[in-house]
Image (spheres, rainbow, N blue to C red):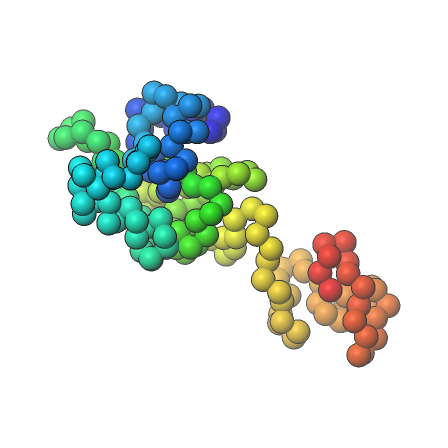
Amino acid sequence: MEWVTKNVPKGELVYNADWDDFPKLFFYDPTRPFVAGLDPTYLLDRNKELMEHYERIGTGKEEDPGPIIREKFCLGEGDARRCARYVFMDHEHEAFFNNALDSGWFEVAYEDDDCSILRIRDEKGDPPPDNLPPNQPAPNKDEGDEPADGEPSDEELKDEEGGSEGESPAPNATGIR
């Protein structure tokens, strides 16, 4: 939350991916507006359509959430209208996180072991090549897959670890066999 107070302009609406994060967010920054807090019923009572978007986005059912957040989650009217450009989420929203990054509308502005803060881009861009949240293990590489840049091939690993055909090599420093 310290990153938000130092890097997001005062008065900027922050889209919090889950209403139950609000107490912590408000504790650390009581001057900042957030999309939902205390009870999602308040958002539902105010605007049913917005609440439906909020639920679809947070549960990962919305594959392209950027334009919806940029255009619908706003404060003020006319020249004073400000729409959310930053998203706060804990790591329980993997589907939303992946959809956001895969859409090309978002970039990771900050990450730690507890949360991610995404910035909504002004224009849609290319999604990042790898968008796993912190502490999320990388998918297992299938035998024979081409190694990523800088990653040793299966043959190089066997040579380094003294493994031969049919033997299971010992785990390397990353624990990957």
